[in-house]
Length: 387
Image 1 (spheres, rainbow, N blue to C red):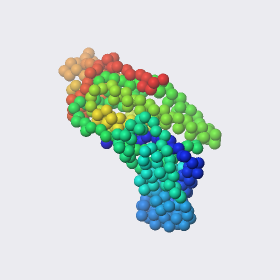
Image 2: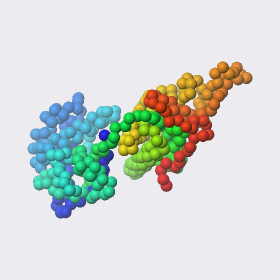
Image 3: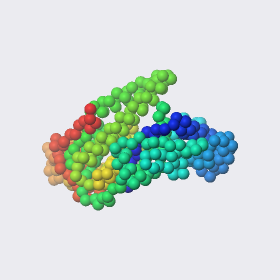
Image 4: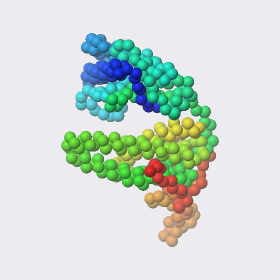
């Protein structure tokens, strides 16, 4: 059952209620940084050891910190260090929390009729949810039940993230659509549809060039500008990925989307991709797979991931790894027919990405939705992001 997170603004009847909540979030941030300083350099990320080192000292140093607040800060601190370890980051100083944000569970907040009652250092305060149509529909369908919310501050406004589980019917796979992901071509399907957005690729190249120039400057203003450019790039990547997922789902009647289980670290290690490290690092394959997974569920479709080994080198008709790929074309081999040079003669010419997509769909062991495979027959869908 997919979970969608809706973001909405919180508004307060009294200014002192908002100040009380901000004070509460500020104390949680201070306890987080206190726990981080105590935990830095620890051999293992154990909540038992961290709690033993932090809890009593934090309650004494921060008198306004409630027990639940200290426990939340400890878990958040431990999550930060576990995330850094999982991503291979070596911290040279304790992790520091700068922004005001905190997870509120059922013990710290309650919700009824569009109003949240949130814990603070003193009494609970009322915060009214700024409702909009999509959020109202989701709350109604879920019966006003949702997971732990996250309250955070941006500027002088307070927002909340509400995770809601969306009920979907169980999908019985009957027809598979293969999806081959790429760099210049964002995606190609086994039905012969190519998703290309040259305007987006051009914009990405400009941003990457600007980032390289700023990195070479090594000044404080350049570093500040680099953060803004990086944030801008992440936003347009996210927007493009959502539009691409919507376009892939809308392009087919097949109820099973078969994707490549791509690992960018493995791809970068291969010699074939040695000169494409920069471009591959810009492609959010994992993000697209995640977005497709929950969006497909909303349309009663399923997503299956398969090993993409040799899918680009295999003739989807014969199943043999015999043929020649040159750019966007895949030249098949006519068995038993010799050319004037004595080699096997070339046969049909497929679109290489569509041929790979068909091979990917076949790995799901389902009937394959396949239409246009020959080179020049594919339908190009562009641009993906509306201007």
